[in-house]
Image 1 (cartoon, rainbow, N blue to C red):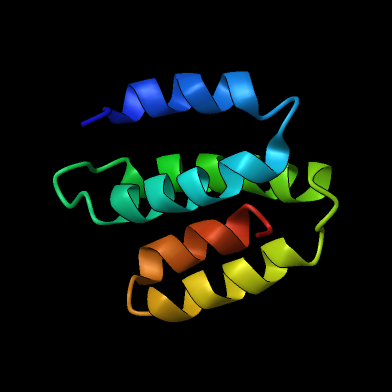
Image 2 (tube, rainbow, N blue to C red):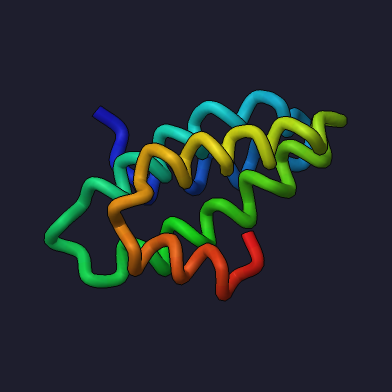
Length: 92
């Protein structure tokens, strides 16, 4: 199994030339991070990853895909008020 750090390295290598290929891995990492209840910085890290995901959607020529994904993510995690507040502060 590949660890999160290694996924970040692979995504960093792939995103500049093949941004569509990294959308699904970013989404998976974001969900994993949000579920990491032992990490008190999970929401901050998820927001950082969401910014990178937004960039990937834009670079892939699908700028409308990110708002759709983000809306679904907000809906799935609506009970996590601290996370939603961080999204709002980040203007996501």
